[in-house]
Length: 366
Ligand code: SAH
Image (cartoon, rainbow, N blue to C red):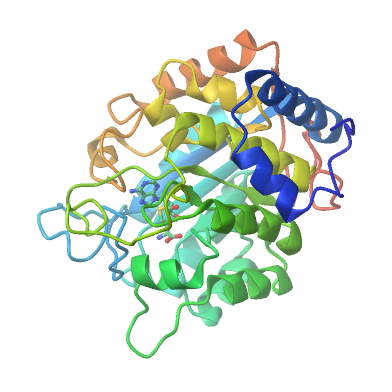
């Protein structure tokens, strides 16, 4: 591996062999090339995306997620438009270029209501707006894009179709095809982000290699990956859940495996924006974020959700940063970035090289 401009020639077999690599010296080489590729392709700026978890209501029954409809004892909340706007103004005050609104698949959030919130954010602030609202009907995606939303995040979770169907049941009469949705989001003009969980029970090395290969095929603008973390109130978190895989084929949900996937994602999609995720920080609170940033990532997502709601957005237990307020998160993440000798990104920080926004350009508007 000598190239520092990404590895267009890396095929699925190469990806698979890196996922299985145990030699420390070789892994150091992987980290070095991923970091060098990151610097060359997207620079030293670490972009901050302020995360607003706007609702924990959900109609889905995803087998892995603590927000699933069947989790009856979870207290549900939905933020008001004014509360969301207040968070957006905080993002501006902290110097962030983007807010990310994320929620369970909540039809109490109607298409026109969220379009109005997006319009207000775009009218009152210079922020780029990213949405992560699940598998919404095309009419909603069109309305939100028209209202000014710039980007959409929808992880395909796993490219293993059988495993996907098991962990992500379709809604009655509406087959779930996230790959097709990602393609239509692109057609609508969104920057498109996706990703997977790492170490889902039943996930094989082969399928994880195929996931990474699919990142490249989809030419993703953003790639978010993190460890699968078991939630006791979900089917996957219960002891009964089993999906047999051949011996030696189960991917572990370890920190090391996450770094490998972050590094390989950087190599197959050199220009992508890649966050060092909260799930990674959850399994290594001391240095997870930093190591992600040193091994291919260039984005972090400080949490702007009001403290009273944070613990309720419990997609998995013991999530990092649920007790800190937005100001504390902001200071902590900034200090971590500076400690690495990196700089805090300015402006919307859209996909590098795209005409919709370049890093470090405060006047770029998407
Ligand atoms: N409703 C939106 C947002 C879901 S939460 C959607 O479905 O896209 C965002 C991401 O959190 C999910 O895509 C999933 O990859 C991750 N997630 C959910 N449960 C998790 C768990 N138990 N462990 C790790 N990541 C999880």
